[in-house]
Length: 169
Image (cartoon, rainbow, N blue to C red; front, side, top):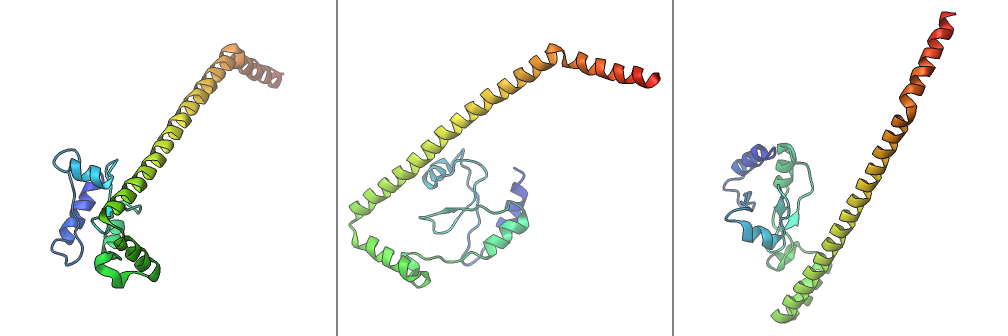
């Protein structure tokens, strides 16, 4: 929500731009299907690039950051813009174009499954780390309480009183 004013300002400044569309999508309402299709998992998420291969924006969230990034956008390497591709990307596009549609769909499904596995593995690791953190925090909290309940406060009070009485002599 704190990003919304900057995003609204950016949308206004790019209204009618020849090559760059700045828009927002309601991923909870009408746009949920689109958001699921392009991999939006949290809010706010900024995507850019070829509509068939949107990339995640990782930069700053202030107006100046997103405006600077948006001003640098333009057509990207794709089958429709081969002149913008380096030789490696041109070769890769040629290789993919030589495949049948069914083979491309199978490769896409395979790569999407690999990504899903990586995301699931990461989530499992994260849950394990969270559990380990919670256990360590509980152990620390209980340990500190036990030390304090075991007389640390009294020990400090006696030490302070001892220093005070020795300075009074």
